[in-house]
Length: 143
Image 1 (cartoon, rainbow, N blue to C red):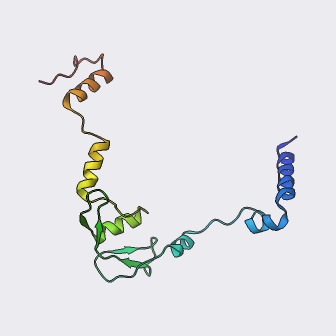
Image 2 (cartoon, rainbow, N blue to C red; image 1 turned 90 degrees about the vertical axis):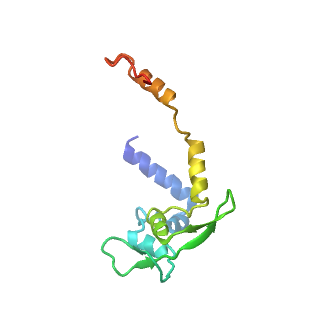
């Protein structure tokens, strides 16, 4: 069986299993479904219109779509303190499709340090000596 025969047989089995109407509804009939364009995706995203601080623009070359952000007060999920989420940060988060922060800056720093504790100097020396054991510098010393 050649590749084209296998593809044809798979298509016929799919057609028998789901039927022509269901495949047409899914967009399988008549080729691959059309992928959304950048403009389609941009129109689907909800946009707020506020009059304050930083402006975020749409796609490059698109001057008519602008969003203005306001400073927001959020509550930290760890300590419960209120913190300010500034307009510039909001634009940064939106440009990168990130979710709003759940923790205040102090709790974020604490969490990062807990997940990735800073390395002690002795541990760094051990790693350097392990990576380069036969170097001419005769190992790294603390002195």
